[in-house]
Image (cartoon, rainbow, N blue to C red; front, side):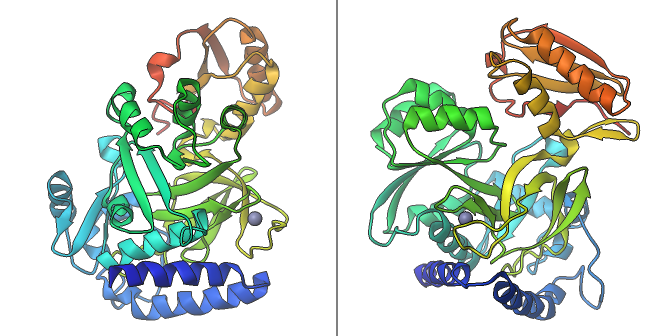
Length: 403
Ligand SMILES: [Zn+2]
């Protein structure tokens, strides 16, 4: 039965993405969304008897978790299950990584777990039905989502926990001889330097993919790097065969809030029935593609997942998005391959490079970015070892509370 759910989702995903025009796809999505809105959304207490769908966020959901899932599971019960078996009856409980105050829970049914697998495979490995892939997933958090893949006959899956020391899981990874590797970009960079694996396909997941990392990874493996954009909230996008990321609009309806030249998505997960995510504001920043992708998919293409909304630097009313800051640093001097940039106060940022080369040029470039926007900002520049900071994967981040 579970495999049937995966198979139906697999076929449906391929069928939907092969519809010809954007207009015809949107008509299909409108019908699916309307059905979910009518039948499934009112089944959880937050929406029972309510006509409007206000935009909500993680804080709203976590403040009254039981009101957003059919089973009425409270956050306390969810966290307790997550610490133990990660099951409540037939439901699976998962959680996002993050600092304790900022973590999100989710509950999904068995059917949804296998649908997720089917959608994921159809997008990432559409030839899975004729080739037996050995997939290695290297992520900071093991969720039961991956167990559904481990149970399938179509592929062999090994999971490697990033929270263990990297030298702990590397021998197991090599022994698994993966043909497909899914990992954060920084791990792929590191893995390329270690050698001993020769995948046929590689996917970046779970953190922002900066252009310099992409170049290093693709050169080291001699492969095109795919991208899987996912979050606690589900699977949000996967790259097409031409290497462009497409949003998973066949399972999620996206609305957008503008943030400078970028957008922050507000999502409605219209195939999920156990936990309702309706008009849920994500903490991500995307640059949408202006033109459709030549691959012919009707799904919205994304030029880049830039970072997180709370990593936008704000100086009073002036804001600067992480992509602008990153480009200023990297374009300042070709010697710069890695850096950290942290806003540490209302008018202060700290730039850290692993070596002196390019430091002054990058400092000047940042000062120019801020000055051009009329912000008076102190740019502190320093040289320090970034390797010790390897698990803090975001290059641009805000480390003080603006409120
Ligand atoms: Zn495409």
